[in-house]
Image (cartoon, rainbow, N blue to C red; front, top):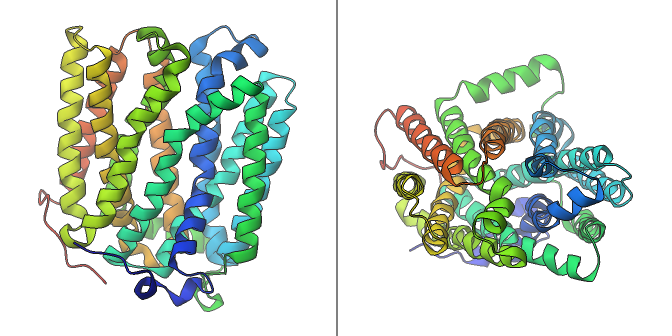
Length: 415
């Protein structure tokens, strides 16, 4: 088992921060995205009442609008960071996030709220893309996968507590209080990054910002079999995750009648991802990214098949749904960090652009799939179960093609 020694793992690229602080800063800026996403789940009914939105499925746009901004912005973030460096683009994105949170607090209409959510997504695109690029600047190979897993463990723990945190805020105030909390956290993360995060991309490695170079970098990224294959597979898997998140409030409150206890059920399910992140960080150095992620993909397909059968025959009570959902999240946690690392592994020379394109492909593909499944919600679990199974089957097919049928086969890694 690979154990991480903080002193041995300190990269000179991110000094003066030592490894624990580096990990915490990376996780804190990455957490801006899932916090802004999942803290809103308990507030959707109240937002609907406040703006007279009668269609419950339409309220899912509070979530999808955020992800649309997040997905599209990533196309630009990477080239900008490869040209100007990580630090200035990161701080600008975080400032946009804070400004959008302030706009949401005073939003007079539902459309204004959706605009604020889109801009929030634009701002968090910088945090997600640049965090991955910074990790790639400082580490490579299995070390990069382990660092990514540790950061993802903290990052993914946020959805576990965010809905419950949002529910607690709403017990003391109302839905606008959620955006006050997001604004305060955004300013704290911005201040910490401004004071401590160094520039990790040397000037000698920066690329000119012109259309030819940007398109050339995009071409290098999408024509790389490993990068494109794992981006498409990650997008498909993420589509089923987004569908779960988009419909979770309706599923837990309408089908299973949990009411205000819904955030606790959501948190229990999300724990599976956090546990997977910890396990992956401990074993990926010994077993390798492919062995772990491919095994998790097979497990994900088995869980999807069981959920589809149980939903089809109306034999999916809350306890079984919870168990299958935890297993789904656990498998997702083992896959996504490794899929990200595998996609980024060949792209060290254009890490920023590759990270942005990877993020855009996975997010936009995931949004399209998740939104489609979410809008098909009809008061039963069948639309989700069908979508979950199809997404996983497609991801397995893509990974098999990418690896030319050689699943579970470790490749020689760059240490």
